[in-house]
Length: 446
Image (cartoon, rainbow, N blue to C red; front, side):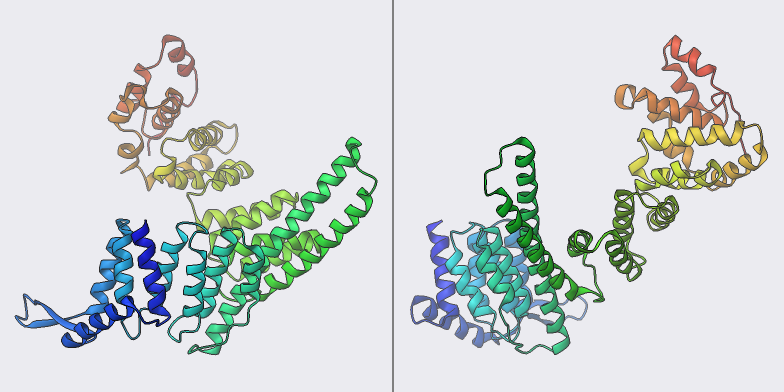
């Protein structure tokens, strides 16, 4: 540990360009690099061309650093970082990311060294100073230095070697992260208000509880406005801002009502129509505020289109008539994640029973099932109804096997081997009960 700490000190001294052993050492390394070419060397023979091929030093060093980090060889990583400091350009981002990560491993222990690294790095031309500021501020929040983190988020960072449009986006992102800080403050004062109100109900309130409530309410409103102002910076900006949008909606609903929150979420969704997450956020929002069932149904249909294996597909099926849900259930069960789950199999059995045994529309129901089964009859038996699965003893729940056996009897035929093997595993009472079910005795073969 002491040796590693010394290496960090030497690296920071090197970045500050202070005279000493570190600078003398790096001067020697720099000279060694100069002797073989600062950026390239000849390292191996190309088997096909039979000629010496140049190998970039940076590429080799970065690869070695990557391997050291993956194997948690922290002292070696520090050694490589020191050597990277001698490269004139192209390594600043790596020095910051790896160096800050190594320093942050010990919490607040290396806080001053990380501050020195941040001060040195944020002014370099070949690094994104806004991102460096965000990462350092998040570290400060992690070690509990909230006020200092807020100062970093609010700090004016000049553009050094960056185009205005790129730097503008990073500035908005830094502002949005500050919005998360204000959001946490807003939530904390909301909790204080709830506690005061509970104390009043319980008769535990002091004489000045009314003034405390007024103060908390004022602070809550103040931080909500600050958070909204920061989150608004990302409105209309292309990108995926999931980490901010839910907090933005929550604050907006508290300040301006449900309709304002829904409008914001709808705008976020419409700007990212092929992204699954905004649609799931909208579904949860509509569910929370008891929105019209048609809205819920439409958003669930979109989710099922974007992700046929999503768990919400089961919720969609519960809201659809059997002839409409059968296709979704077959698609859901195409995915391995649902292969041994009771819920979709039970839903499928209920659907098949309705489509094949209702008093009216049996022909239409059979066609709907046949259309789905015709695409799967070549591979579903081996995938869902294998001999191995039926004879695995206690590995699979008997309830699941009964559901699968019923489906196999319906789709493949009563004589399929899977059905017979599953039937043999049942107790006499279970066998008698199952034999009375209509679907078990179905012979629906297309």
